[in-house]
Length: 189
Image (cartoon, rainbow, N blue to C red; front, side, top):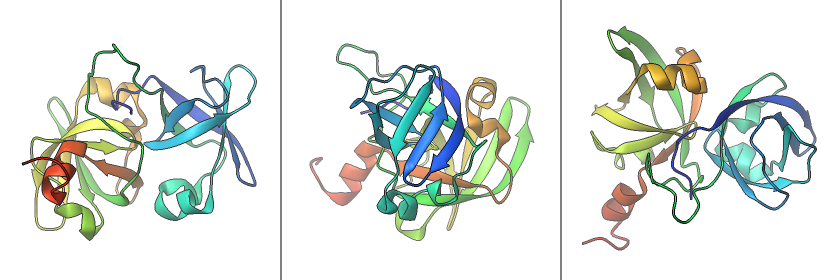
């Protein structure tokens, strides 16, 4: 489990077949979990200052990694450990769909980003609950018929990749686990 509190922004160094190499100062032991842009991976052996993961065809089909290339910046997060504060929301690293940025509006205290999610994800979006956008825990500000918005505060704009979002960009989306359970009837009454 992750919380959507990004620890580092890494940069893709190379995509060689199924292996993705990311320059990052976040230390991950081989076999350990790491979340890259909201996608959970098992780390492969790598030298210090680098993460290596295997990207399967399934992951390429369901995430933005179908278009990954050297130079791409990625949000990096380690899993939460027992005893850590949960500061964000619970994220599994299982991307539910790829959304598209419709527009970014400057506001006095940040940016409002309008996103179009896959239709199957709309029923899981509720205003004032959380969503992971490229692995970053954000509050859903507003939900309309076919889109939703989030408001990015200055800290999020500077410490994650979300500050560079522009119309047309694609993002990985994972809805709030508790909302998903309640809507799907899987454990909450």
